[in-house]
Amino acid sequence: MERPASDVDLLQRYRAGTDLLKAALAGLSDQQLDLSLEPGSWSIRQMVHHLADDGDVYSFVIKRAIASPGTPTRFEGFPGNEPWGCALCTSTRRIDSALRLFEAHRESVADLLEAIPDALKKEAIFIGDDGKEVPFPLDRILLMLIDHLDEHLKSIRDIRTRHGLN
Image (cartoon, rainbow, N blue to C red; front, side, top):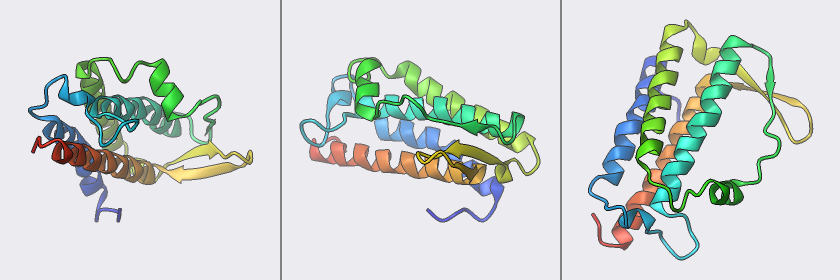
């Protein structure tokens, strides 16, 4: 995705994610949340939990970059999306709290970034697999989260279409 013209536009797109996700889920029954494109692929329910988990991870990364600049983040011990989701019962849990968490993260992070001048130019520092520090500007993290949501929204639309739920 191309970066929006201004920080204000970027934050508006980030905030809008909550409404986009709610709209994509509108009218689906609890049973329909378990639909997927094909056997073995993620269900809508699993995607919602996955998106909420991303909020957990990246809200911390963003806060760390602001409150403790230069402190690196290392993603050690992450077993991968499938084992993570299985361990956290993302295929069976209700999505209500995950949606509220997603919304709370989006609102809280956007409020924080709006309150701090030039916050989006600050950098998170990640430790790469090779052990080297990799700076990652916060505006790029927001762009990544926007793109990631867009990918899952497309998948949800595709699932709805496949199952005649449009």
